[in-house]
Image (cartoon, rainbow, N blue to C red; front, side, top):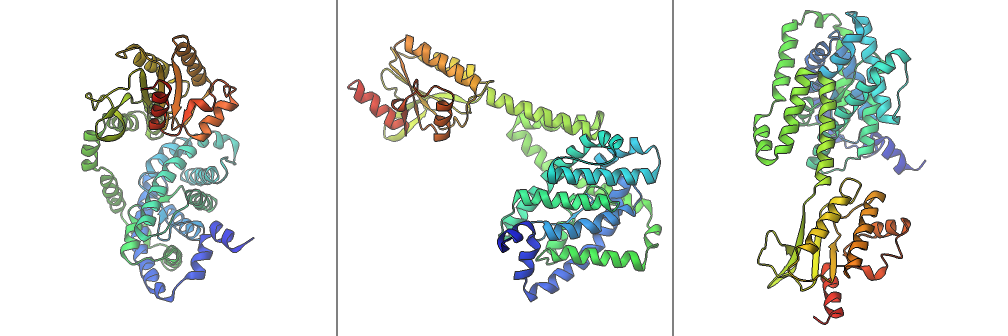
Length: 439
């Protein structure tokens, strides 16, 4: 295996080869500073997840090392997280029936399944528990990957290196699988501990290894010290972290920008509050998918016109004084064509033809936004072409992408829509029309 491939699979190898001696001191300092935070935070999130507090320490050690070896981000810190703790509790506590040892075992199985889902897309384990945990594991994996990838990419942008999303998913999966095998619970990128490491001068993944090593030393030297940490202290850590998740400024900004996204936020909050954590997340995801389908089903669409002294063709609704080319309709539909909007597209074009101020000879579809088409939408397109042909109107496309043209050929309509039906730009299509009719 060549060196480049090894470094892509195990980024720590590349970091070790290029490691500079001047980085060692800030990495060790940041690792030591990090330990002071990960001990109370790990214990607090373990208790919030319905597990013995010491479980949070075990959960912190292995993911730090695993991500340091396999993770693409140089300074991202993995560990127990406030966004996952309530979902873990909602999943394992009903199955644990008030037995802490069973809760620990279920949490480990959940982390292992989550890791395997992220790595290979399937889960293995004791079948009775697997059936109960596979759905929650997939949901928690989705949330953890979303949180971690956003944090990792932002760190990469800030520090000037690229982050591979596939490598990120694999590293998060390895960290969670290792956590589960050693009695831990699911982890994700920590938005609270990572900034501590960065501000303390962290340069590379070594900071995670140092923190894990110091945590092991702490547990060996003073194993009983954490037993005297009051539960109220751990509760305070959780409460402060939970309060930081409520960003009023962002909520107000979102309400001003998008009513749809605000409604989704409210629905997710109500679902989590009244149905359950995981069920609420599922409701939010389902509603988001419906909102996406609705947007694609009813996309923005308009007729294009020319403006004096301005090159190109422009939205008629924004420029009502624009000029139409006699006998020509230029239609723009801002979405890929698929089963849900094919009929909408057909109705839209027919409406433009019927509402034109004079007889129409040609329809030009500005197809730059048509990034896909399925068989149902193709049938609607063929029906539209037949309808226009009966009226003596030709249908042509401008700026259609090559892969969409190839798909039309594969769908068997290449003879219907030959090369003469396609133009590289709207302007070239208009010029060809003017030349044909001596305008």
